[in-house]
Length: 167
Image 1 (cartoon, rainbow, N blue to C red):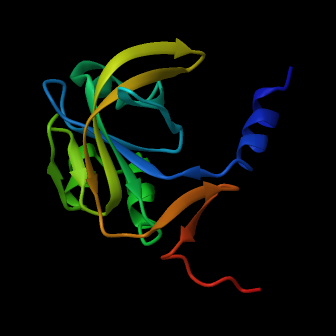
Image 2 (image 1 turned 90 degrees about the vertical axis):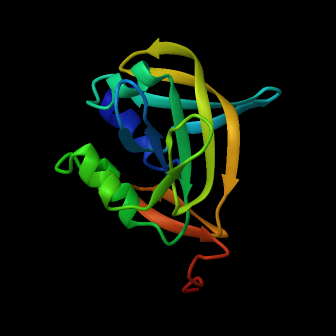
């Protein structure tokens, strides 16, 4: 079996879309940066979101039972760093980006190229993480055309808004 460090280094070579996952409700306002998001099924529309249970924000997502997956575009390199930085409080994070709400009340970031507003319908635990199965309640498309991926421990633009290749 591969050790944890070997696994993490290998996973750094697996590009993932950059998302800011947000929630609000009785447990409070919270958000974090994640790449561990994927589609599960379209009937009913369902996403999977993974979150470390030791994260300070975990209690908010578990208590609110709603979240919004905000998929970031090529021009949004500052937002994921902000939501990953533990030096900023949750209120400071949300004060620095424009946002609104959809059906569940979870924050929808104006900078997202698409946002999936969801109710958490099932939670499983694997190792250090919770796996949230999230039924999509509403979708909002933004204006960006290119995406942002995390690869080899850095952010990279892809698609229509990405700068031309140097080749």
